[in-house]
Length: 125
Image (cartoon, rainbow, N blue to C red; front, top):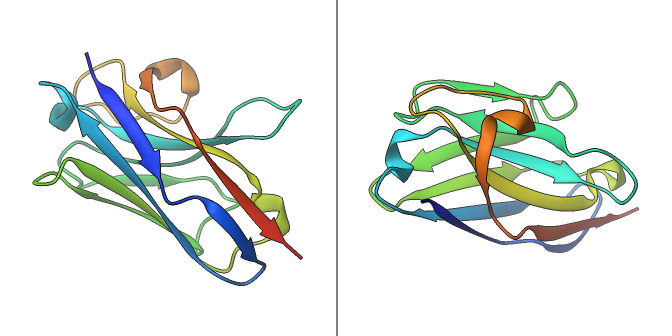
């Protein structure tokens, strides 16, 4: 089992930054890729970014490339999502998740078996 706890959400003005954190626990958490997803009411959960278990590979959605950076500190079992130049359309509940399979990096929510409770990010114009 893997447990995930997100933090760092809040209300910011457009153009500003936020850093989300995801603390993972469980014996296999360090062997799983971690992804960030976001969801707004009435829409499907959307992939944002992911990082491989050894933090050597990352993936980003086109909508956040160049603005968001995912990183991972395996010594602290923590994954970060640095969000810069935020836009109102980034407003959503952000979730971190761990992959179902060990080692593989994925972008589909279906490939993630463990989810945090989510943290709200609101960007005002």
